[in-house]
Image 1 (cartoon, rainbow, N blue to C red):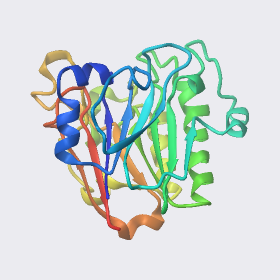
Image 2: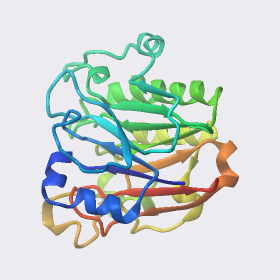
Image 3: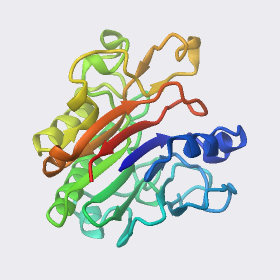
Length: 269
């Protein structure tokens, strides 16, 4: 099974560039997880008849945030879950924080398949002035990990998305210059530490434990992508129970259309 995650930074924009459908037809994912769709289902007329679509779009602000799954027909989807469970929202006091309510921004969608859950997340950005770091560190990250652990009690979990953090120094081109900046604060990096401590596997680092230059996002400034001055902030994580089924993990920087590129996980049947 091939699973692909891609922050498209506006599905209508990448589709209108005629870069979306050709990529999907070429790589043929079984599961495609999209972040930052900035649209509702049907707003981009996409001709992919071999896939079923499942969307979680922002209700707070149109054309903002949003996640979606494209699941190949033939894979049985037992359940579709939108957002966090209400109990976790209440426990971690996730709500309006001055920027908006992250629960209404379409940031999390999960599907239950035969063998496991697949979860797709677009984690809130901490903002350049770190004004949303408190939400991220004290509420969102703990709630998200609690959700993954709760799902894992029922079935193993694969989760992916734009988590808006580079975990280690090797995950960004200029770590020294970015220490303490949004996306590379101790608090954000701790969120990934806790995911790993809980037993989840960073699939890319499972196959490529050491080395920089492997990035999934580049700034639009200073020709960053051409110079590969980027950050690895897009991930596939897997439950430890799926470790023996992990086949490969890759980043596809040659795929254009967004400031992010797709990241891929292949698992054995």
